[in-house]
Length: 222
Image 1 (cartoon, rainbow, N blue to C red):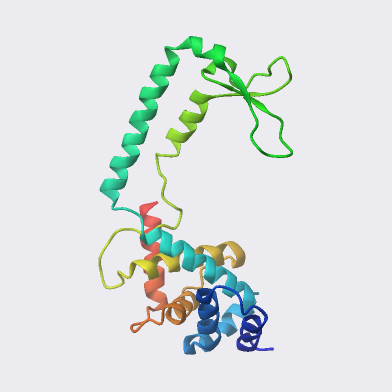
Image 2 (cartoon, one colour):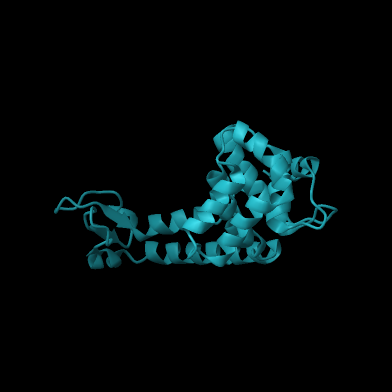
């Protein structure tokens, strides 16, 4: 069975899947660019349905990447969160009587035991009389604050302009390349470019060299 036949079979087997997924599958099956991509993809060990699954994930994630707010606004919002956390930590540290109000909290996970939620660090990580672990509000707040330092997705787009400044395509390319590196040990830029051209029906398809440049830009930012 050829890649085209396999993907067409998937569409016939799954007619009730979201229309967007079916359209992506159709483009991978019938895109002229894919005729050049499949030999290398199959040689690397990929299957048509694997490629389709990865492409769906990358299409969804790239849409989220390009919806991110401008960097200055994002930085200001995150700083506001960190400032609020510092103020709350300071207030909690000066209100030791709050420990009298510590209570058991059921986390709602069938296999987990209840935990003692403590207001301060005094009981953090300790076992209570009933043998339950305790978790403190300050430790949770500090964890949240640490997540504000660099919240960007690993393959999020950089905000730049230029000849290859197709934000959604750049985000897609970075995410698909990351999957290829993880599973096949190499980014396969020529084939990533061909897949992007087929999926987005680019009037001006990007080249393998442009994919490499996009990945280089990402590396220089990290």
